[in-house]
Length: 542
Image (cartoon, rainbow, N blue to C red; front, side, top):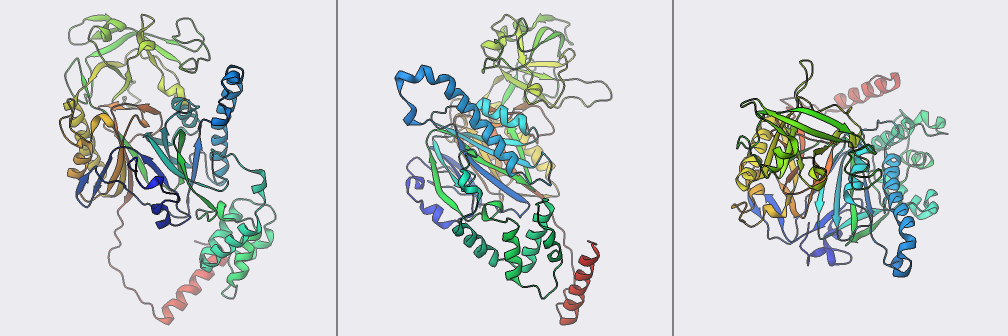
């Protein structure tokens, strides 16, 4: 993250010079950072950098899409080109989805991509909500996080840039690319080379039968032979997690850009939004006295739907019509739209109640009330599950319902509750570091709504003083839909561009208790160990 006048305006940047050419870089430019490092909580530094390293089972895909092309801004032809432009924009999303599928190792399932960081800045030819919905629909279990920034950078590697707009000439590696690959492989040990060859064989590439003898090579097999074999099997720098052929940082002023990370990524996400119940005055309530007694489902194109079929703002989304609600405490019954408007509510929350064989819904799914929700004279709530196709659509009759307003004190309380719960959940695990995307209405300065400076960062520091955390204040935060009162605070899927939230991205691993051991590195011990390993390899045992 950088300040508007910071390092990223250098070309090439000084920070980039300090990092390996194989390092993926994603930066956001904003007016203020939020950083916790070595007990220091501050927002005034010009640059904040968080570095992470993963093993070979992890890969990444940087992308940049939806950037307006100034060469296509002929006003006389703008109307004629609208249809073509919309088609090209849609194709950009499809190209990105194609690249995500293409970069997924064939030996793993569809849940390979664990987290996708998405930044939005300036003018975009694509609606961020549409991009998030399409990507989330294709990868329903992926965690998508990020925010709206003033600008940013992404390092685009050869064959991975612009959402996957490949150059057909790149299909065949150049002599320079082969030389760079050979140089990189030569720096690896013979054991690492054997692993690479084994992985290439596991991908089912054709014509590799001759390589099987090298799966368990004897001690006389030379490194040069292994290097040549890996290259002949199609290994290139761009196919590894260590690409050497890269561009300088792409400076993004307009568009949508980010990095997808897949494989063995120990990542979790937590979302906090401070909303207070207007019926109970509680923060993060576990239940509500109000229940939905009459409801209907309106699918796209059906009578009563708030959008015409195909409308990009919501024409393809199924809606729930909340007709009647009832209080279990007083017996009072109200029309759904009067229930929310009569209390001047900003949000409505629904919590499903299932039968005895199914767990209860964890928390209230929040919907910010806007014209489509009440403009038809009915209370209409979009079906979030149907948007990503992960759950069947069921009626909300019997669901608990509550109404909420944003509240500064509730924001402070909720982030404390969420992080206290996090502390319980990571007991016995190791919290390595995190990223934090907070609404610019939550800091860094105290305001009329939140009277604490850097509330989110300071709350984090109080509970995890030794765990580094870096982030920025966004003009809209991307993360899983905010839920109020959820005990299972780890969320994934249902990505949305939201407001007045704090999104935490956490890297959590198990604690390793190595205990005590005896290390004998004498010649006899090493010789016996190597013979045992070679025999195990030849017999196929682990």
